[in-house]
Length: 428
Image 1 (spheres, rainbow, N blue to C red):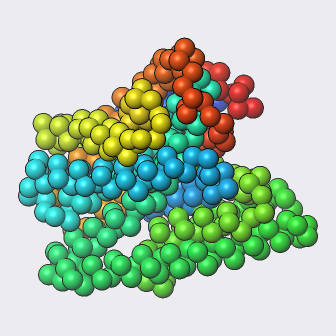
Image 2 (cartoon, rainbow, N blue to C red):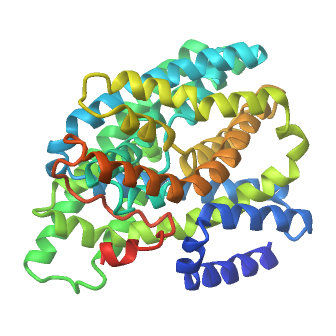
Image 3 (spheres, one colour):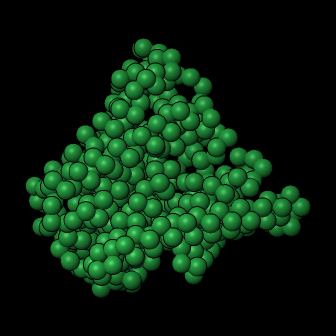
């Protein structure tokens, strides 16, 4: 493990130092660290089978920071002009995607049962803006379209989280012969987690805001408080019997609401974004090692079929249905539908499910399907993001669609991607 950590540190230094060059070659961070993890597993430098507890802790802390940061960055005051689109995608498109994914899982994998099928569908519903960074922050794409994709990605992982853990709790309850108890416990987990996150996030945010206003703290270290907030909420919720991930997500929203300006929010949560990026690289590397060690189990026609349908029809049809009558052109709806990559949240859900549920073939099947889908998504979306964005941008320049070109807030920079050529000048 020590050797693997050293290799990881060296890779982070090299990747960050050459990030612009990687971006020009259409290589994203997930692609690089996924391949690196697979290579280390093949060379037996890392053996994730014996590091279950460490892997789960890494996955949990990373997801906690991601949920908090994404929720905090998406300010309600910035979303008013695009709220109609995002509400459609989140409240219509996301449930349709989960429902369709559940039906497909039941058809292709009847042996996994009801709750694991729901877990699989919900775990693969969230999108990852980091994998489509060349789209979300490419200036040739209208700001409104980029903002829609960015906001959807920032919120759908938090909305899918309670469904994933509800299904996991129900699965555990079914295994123990106490399904009803498992369902009730899952509902209480969500309620307690939301309460802890909302109260702790808001109070911590008010303290930080007060300290900034009265100059009680050194501004350079004040963002460290924001890193501690999701950790406090996650473990505090656990102490009180609640869901720590829900607590972290709600805390991000509450923390942002306690700040007096958008600039204050962005400055204060900057470290959570960078920290989650750093840990996310580690998750991708571990995932690559796990996937390489289970390659034979991943390459089945059922896994590949589910992955391909999940990344296309299960994403694009619900998006199209949810955006009917929105005024967006068909080309834009197809563009938004395709750029729904599956990434960090999905693999973290898979790692946590694998470590928290009893080892059985059904659980291994679900984890394998998630892994297959994410691997295909990393390659497909990573390679198509920049060229397809350029093509779509050229179409926008020729046709000048009214709705797409309406004024919109520039998307917040997600750190989990590599900037494409030309982005850095535009973004500053």
